[in-house]
Length: 330
Image (cartoon, rainbow, N blue to C red; front, side):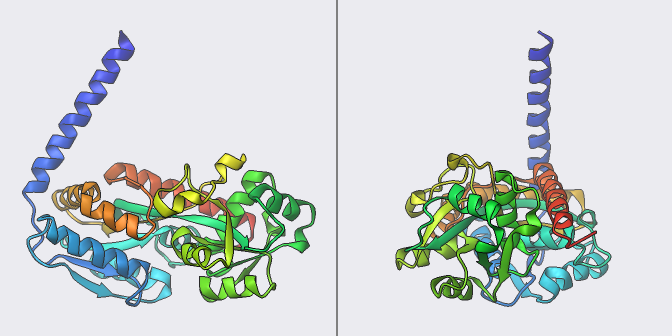
């Protein structure tokens, strides 16, 4: 009886909390909504700002057009410092973020800045990592690749489109660690300037495997250039991506999601914060956003408010541990 009463109390509290947030959210309307994309036009952060901004207005969740400001530099660090130091009390501002943001925060790449200086709003999906080989490779599954990496580390080099210690590198280390490769420094990762160049090196035989995101791998799969050994998702993706086997179904509990979402200034009012959380949640639940996700290879990741804040904190802690293991940070 005590357990039932506790569950009822939690449910009632959740309902009251949702009602309060909803009422508060209805009382706030941004006068000049703005989204900062911490990179030049055309990248993932720019895509996140522009797609979300357009649909927020299309769905009637914003009365005015959202301005998108591209503020590149420092892998998102210039934008982060701008928000923390100059726009820390803006109620109209949100900023696009992803796993790249938490990776750099975890590794201290935003000097003097921490995740607690901003408020984390919510996620709008995830682009799961993949590990692939050339289509004519003799390696047929992920355990075979990882076993070779474990027994003969010098025989396998893996290419990716991010720097050493970046997200592409970390995805491989997550899989290696899950397989039982304790010294992840033995994993040979070679960084290239983007996934396209990394795949070119794979096809040339310079490396034996490739790591990237599901969305960028799809075109290379369709052209017959690569074969995906595993997608680092909890379960198989949907649509055309369903052909990719998961690491988990091959006995390797490795999850690597390049999530996409938003943060807000640290001194944003509670009313404005709750309103933005509500708007992002409603957008995520809309049919139009589901179409955007399907068309761009984004998988479900539905987290808002406190749940997203906790997720980001866990993400930072996990990346800190891996980064120490490979000597990126001390």
